[in-house]
Image (cartoon, rainbow, N blue to C red; front, side):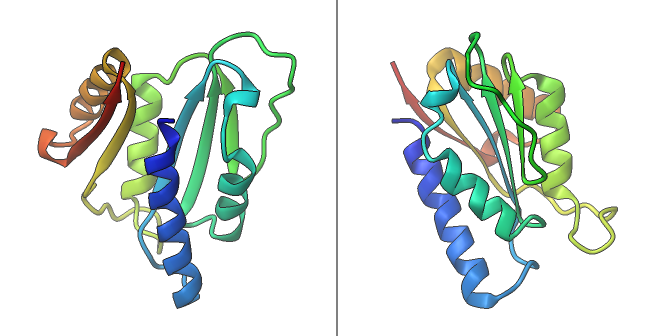
Length: 144
């Protein structure tokens, strides 16, 4: 499943932050899309990690098809209907690049990881590049 590699990386970052008892570590934002809310694997675990270290992690969940499950906002997670947009990628990159201190200084984005079918991965890569991420910083896990 596409989320597995990213979940593993986020768990490692979370583990490192816990071991160091710090919010000064790397920042990660996950834009996670599924057809239905019940297909958002690891949602509770990811949201809990974001709640524990809100300066380091933020989760944005997308549901692309109508779903009966309510999508409730949370300070550590955002729930949206529809596809991930280029504008949202720009917002996510800005959040990830902002320094933890005053939120104004920018640090370079070292890596963007994209998992999904080829068309999705290509679209997300183009959007990242439009927002200034060099192609060399974009990594893929593609299937289908």
